[in-house]
Structures are given as structure tokens and as C-alpha cells.
Length: 470
Image (cartoon, rainbow, N blue to C red; front, top):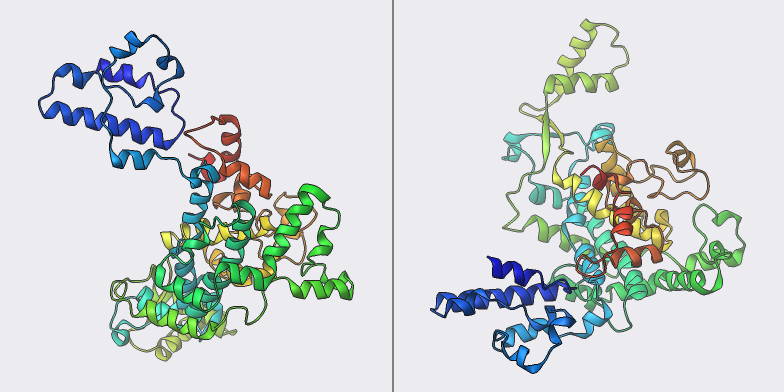
């Protein structure tokens, strides 16, 4: 034990995860040698790999160094793990690797879109708009509750929403971020777009890769020009470069022409209708996911019938009238029908909305997108689901700054994410005080294995209401 403590004291110069891997490899080799019958002195006096030793350990005469314990023999696997690569030089703090994993997850897009499509009541739209309440007949449908993928993803709306976000709006954000933060030719995020290889090849073949969508929409060019001007040319004419929906009516015809050149436009995704149908069919016929039930709560029929009567009958002024109306509603519903609504406490909401789609909206706002135009489908999904949850992760209305002032954010240009009341409960960059590209770069450079920027790290993290509660 003492020898291990002494070895641990000499690794104060470790500055990356690779060094920790080397340390574990050396320790494992020494333990394996001990089990095979080597001398106890050779086992207990484990020496850290050379890269972990301080510079002072390499000083001294040759006689002193000759008495040091032998180092582990060469290993091809260890050499591979410890060989610096171009990626290490381009991304020393793994910021791009973090973005690659975060932005290419699929559930954060699939689940919210399916929830919106599944919990829609065409007969009583006011019920589903308020809290997602729908009717379900287990006897007719042969399942106690709706199947999330087999029933939800089969709805055409689910395929349309998923395709619009995963094949369009998400790609606007990915391409712009990658062009801003990656060396030219180094595309780690778009190399894994879509999260799986088959769909990625189809999208690339159709000309729907993130680079294609970023170029056709003009948003990547807008973001690069905007950031260049921020760094070198000032920001006084920023609004004129990309007029948003709130100030478009006040601009000249030339500005309106520029506005049409930038942003999401109809038919931007090639073969969008076909891709939507394939998405719905593939998810609803997936054998592995077919039996997954939807996250929902059964509403008591008596309560729900009374709730419906308040909408359908204006003459219910006493208890007897209410009872008669409820009996009439009972007769109109098919026998065995139950009323259900989504369970907003499940991870389908708390994970995929707050720590999924809200991140995309936050990044898009940080990049300068007009969310009402460029991220309108994502914004629609988040607004609908947050209403069921009783939260405000994005402003419900962007026409004025009433909500921003009510939330104590102050007047000025409306920011749908930064000015939202409950943004601190999300993982959007604005929840951590990150509102510019420069802020994002500095935040992603935080490295627990490298430079210790404790004060700045804690300052950013504690701005999040979620982190500050831990």
C-alpha cells in the first residue's frame, strides 16, 4: 500500500486522460506479474510511466537512474493509446467530441415528435392542446395503452416532424457550429450525423447532409459573416445582415431580398415527403421497439366526463344538470373507452426536451438564427410539450418583450431561450451564462485533466438552476 501511495504522489504532472490510461496500464501489468510468481519487490515498487514523472525525476546521474525499477516492456496497444494524433492537436480538450455525441443523439428528436403526434385528440382538440388528453379503447386496440412506436410513430405527423428537425433544422446548427469551431477539413460532427450509418448514407446520397443543408439555407454563410464582423468589424450593422421576423417590415426591399436568401425555406430537404413516410414506417415496424408502451396516465372517466361537459354544455348550472350531462356523455362514448394523458414526469419529457431539443434551440439562438423561421418545427414541439408540463423553457410568444420583462430579463431584443422563465432547468447554453460563440468556446475548453480553471468553471456551472441545487 505504501508503495502505491508513493507512486500516486509522483503523478502530479498528469494533464490528460491519456496519462491516466497509461498509469492504469502500468499498474495492471505489475499486478499481473505478481500473480505469475515474480518477486515481491518488483511487484510492490510500481513505477509510473515516464510521461507521468515530473521533470525532476529525470535529473540525476546515470548511477542513480540505473537503480530504478525496470519499466513495463513495450506494448503495441499501449503505444497506440499514447500516440498523439492530429485530433489531439486540433481538439485538445475534446470539445468537438462532446458536441459530436450531444448533437447526434437520436432519442432527443424521436421521442418529443412522437409524443406530439400520439397525444393529439382530433375530436376534442382543446383537451389535447391543454394537457395531451386523448381517448383509448383497449378492447378495440388490443393493448392496454398505446404503443409508443407502433402506434405513435405510425402517425404521419410523427414522420413529418422528425424529418423536418432531424433532416433540416438540426443540420443548420451542426454545420454552422462545425464551420466555426473545427479546422478546415476536420468534420467530426457531420461525419456521424444522424446517429446511424444507413440513414446517413441515404441523406448524403440525396444531397441532404449538414453541409448541403447549411449551404442551401445560407445560414452557415450568415453565421460566419456575423462572427467575422463581431471579431474584426464591429456589430453596428448586424441586424441589416439578416433581418428577422420582428424587424422585416421595417427594412428596405434590398434587405427583404437578403432575408429571402437566408434561412429555412419550403422544399429545402430533398425528397422530404418520401423520407417522412420511410421514417414513420421504419419506426412503427421495428421489432425491437414494437412492444414499448407510451408514457401516460389513465384519467378517471367520471372526472373526465364532467370536465368535458364544462366545454360541451353551457346550461349546466346545478348538480342535477351536471349529472344529466355526464350521463349523456357516457352514452356517446364507446364502451370500454378510457381517457389518458402523457406522464410528464418521465424521461421522455425531462431528458429529451430539457436536455435535447432545448440545447438545439439555445445553440441556434446563440448562432443568431431567427428561431421563428429557421427552427419553427423544433420551437412548435417544445412549446406544445412545455405547456403540458406547465413550464416555460422557451417564450410562448415572440411578438413583444412582455414575457421577458415579466421574468426580470429586461427590455430589448427578445431572446426566446435566454428570456424564458425556466431556462435554468435545461442544458441550453444560456442556462450556464453562455450567449456568444466566444463564451461557448471558452466553456467547452474546460478540462478536468488539464488546466485548473476552478473559479471560471464554477461560475458558469452555478448559473444553472439545475446544477446549483446539487
